[in-house]
Image (cartoon, rainbow, N blue to C red; front, side, top):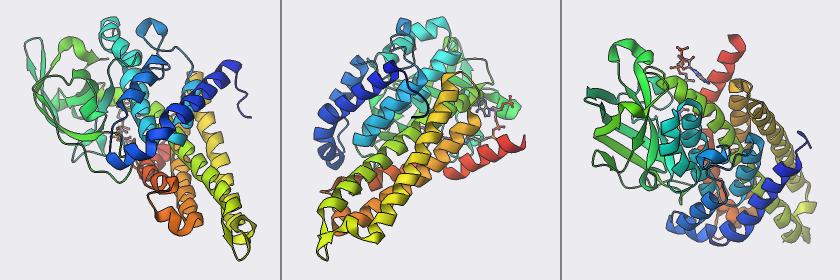
Length: 379
Ligand code: CAA
């Protein structure tokens, strides 16, 4: 298989697969139907080192490489995409920016509890009127003694109501345009951080996504990540990794949809034979397999570059674009193969179909991925 995985990488993939099958799968359907956050599972993932997989052990993480993380994420998404997004956001866009841009003191104070799974983290970039156009954000920082008071609204914040530490982007120097945006670590356990009721979403119903109001939320000067004005760099660097994670999530969902479809095609009979013997179903399965295989190569290629510390903006965006669009298509075909049963909440493909839909939207829409790819090609 490309790339040639090491024994350690395969052992981590297998551990994730075992945990997903035995601990996550049993309650996945019920949690989805009840919109119940998987608190105990996330705690266990923390104990396994899966909430800070690429973070050195000295800062509470597992200290494994990026490919191992991607393999684990794919396995977990195959079973429960809500658990996968909670893990992905914590790893990719909460822990990684602190590791890459944080001071030693920030790493001790914030990274250690996040990476060990003691607390959950998230990423506050998006606002009600600044989604794809992230630089249009309006959250304002006002200088006060010892730090900044933040005021504004953040939207679609994954892990919002369950998280404690968030990477937050805000305008600190309004006369400097995009270079006036700075990134901080925000402690959400304070009166100025007001979490709304979790959004009623189509899918990923057991993960928590909320609107957040910042009303004089305090961040200290020492909570600044990198320098003043580096907010977008911190954000977009985190999203390069985040996008590979979301591509891995989509890949896991698509693989599950394909597995379910193959099993069903062997046991469901029409016109006196299994539906898998009808050419119409065979063409669907073949096309699904081709898209899943191609997606896997793109995801592993982007992850391999990141593993080596090489630039991967182009490859991450390409992997996210192709894999998420393919996964939406694969899940749609799975529902079609299942027919009426695919439309029933009793069958997992119905959940896969709902869960996969957001992957072409969050951490940058497909339209934004195309923009990122084109800019890289033309620069
Ligand atoms: N790594 C590091 N720095 C980067 C970078 C990268 N990949 N891409 C851009 N930058 C830097 C640029 O160099 C620039 O800095 P300088 O001026 O010093 O060179 C700065 O960031 C701003 O870059 P641009 O001028 O290119 O930014 P832009 O305003 O033109 O926006 C964009 C570009 C690609 C459209 C960007 O706005 C974007 O990615 N939008 C989508 C936002 C997004 O993905 N949101 C997801 C929300 S998080 C989420 O969904 C998480 C969740 O909960 C699941």
